[in-house]
Amino acid sequence: AVVDLPSGTELVPHLLQRYPDAKVVVTVRDSAAKWYRSYWEHFRWASVFPPCFTHPFVTYWRDITASTGCGFLTRFPPRFPAAERLACMAAYDEHLELMRRIVPEEQLLVFNVREGWEPLARFLGLQPPECRPFPRTDAYSVLHWRCTPGVFCLTVYLVYACVLALLCGAGICGFGCLRRW
Image 1 (cartoon, rainbow, N blue to C red):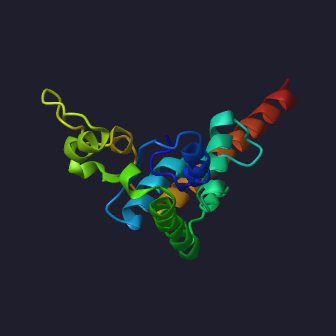
Image 2: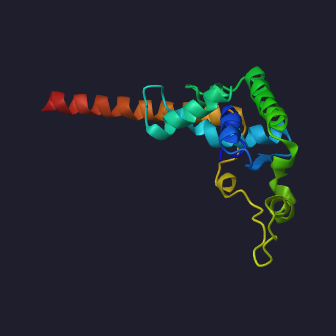
Image 3: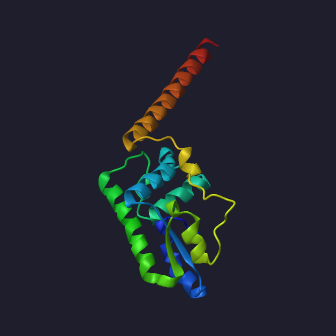
């Protein structure tokens, strides 16, 4: 499963060849702009780490965003140009169109979670669960610090400036202590 990440598109033809009767569920947002906002909130955090920081999770985020044409989201230092944002949203729309072209119509469900259990259960040949309401919140997004790209960039730069000032101050104090010793 690749949820609503356009990066998994190249896998679909291979998976359909291997599993010709597979059902494919493509999750969508209300618009490319709403998808982008969620995508940005999720992946922007990798942009706070310099390229020399190679933690596997940050490297994974960078690889995923690069494969979707949205690599600028994880670029250090953070910048979010409008032209690249539009290209990223276009990649999302292209992903949806490609999925509609390569997956047979009877095997494809383009699913917006706002629709609830009914279309998903019907597509899978199941009854919707009666005892469990469909989850209506995006728990991950609820935890995010909501801000504009400009505020995010400014905050990252200010944090780096404070860290640098603390390191310089500690170095100066340490040097002063060594001179007196």
